[in-house]
Length: 289
Length: 263
Image 1 (cartoon, chains in turn green, red):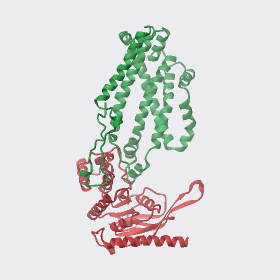
Image 2: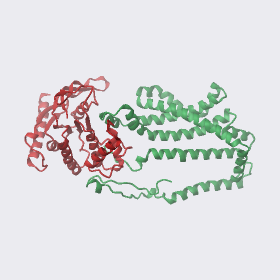
Image 3: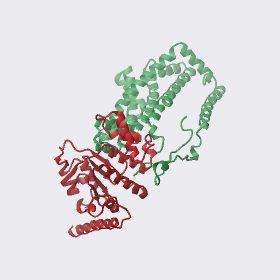
Image 4: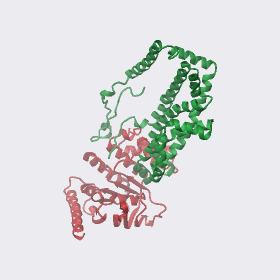
């Protein structure tokens, strides 16, 4: 994992030529000490204890109620051999990707508008508050009733559930834009396209990255509901199918797959992008008033 | 180089709730000669920054005339001279390195990327930051950030250099060194400078001419032709510098007192 040492590049403000004035100082922060080689060990303990608890519980409880890890994995392997696993998981991933893209597109546009224009913020305020507070299940059921039991309804519903979260976060980003930096760029006569690319966009990145992760994990959870209630394939459909069969192995197996795929997407892809986008933030800022 | 000519510049802001307008600048007539170093001295809120923003073109809503004259000919209003701006805070882009921050303000023009690179390296060297090309602003001290800000304003080879209390966020020791560097860089290439400050000693030490402003409304009330009394290089320990700085404060106080009586 990142940050094996909590190193802070401390700079001297008051004295000397630049060469003596910068000095790397290792600042010991006791409550952050639990990093380094320890971090990997602790994470491993966390994961193993979870697996251990599952194993233990499965020994105590009847197999019909809680199958153990090995049974679940065995079941997963069967699903894979029958070709079901790939089919259902890829159907789910496709839905998530399409509705995620849709929600980010709409949400970023509306969020920017609301953050920049006070009139738009007021006009859309009630929509946003309702969108954030409506029970998500209502949106999904509503979409199936309004649009019909089809793919369009499922994707619309997932996107509709995710959009308000995206709007709210992007709006914060747009509100936090620093007008002073734009002013600087204008004083130096930078073309508008350059200002957007080099001055505005980097300020929005933190919000976009955080929003992307939140939207992805929300879409990932909602897709299961949408499939469970109105689709004939996908992970959610399989869970509903095995629920009707009262087969706990199937439910756990597909649940496990969802955890693994989201973890890969979130910790590997999204986090790597975030780290890249914020390489300039590795060291603390010394903003002046 | 360019001469700045402003005539009758008046600027007002609407007050909240439609209760009239606040006059920020009242009929400001100011001319800055080719290659002249003028300090605008005045208390906070006297409209110094407002005036700089008008001169820089950032603020286009004012009454009066502003023009630039380059070697005797009026510069067309569509063309505007090249203007470098140093702000009170460095206002560097935190996600760009020192090198990239300087590259940001440069137009490619007909230079090759390697010629641009040479020019950037030269300026980093000139402001004493060699070796820090790839540092991000957040890794630099405030004083070093402001050096980058200065290099950024000068690298575009400005005809007019505008500076808005650029040293006021620095500690006095760093500010003293930066003042000397600034004078040295300015003497080497002599661009027209309009420097805003509320520090009378700094104004006298740096300027050819100190223009004194008072607030509410912001207007020019006096001026002090320092270059007729002091030659360069100047010495901050020179008793005449201190005497002139006291004189500048007096001019300001007299104007404030007169305003109080008139008002």
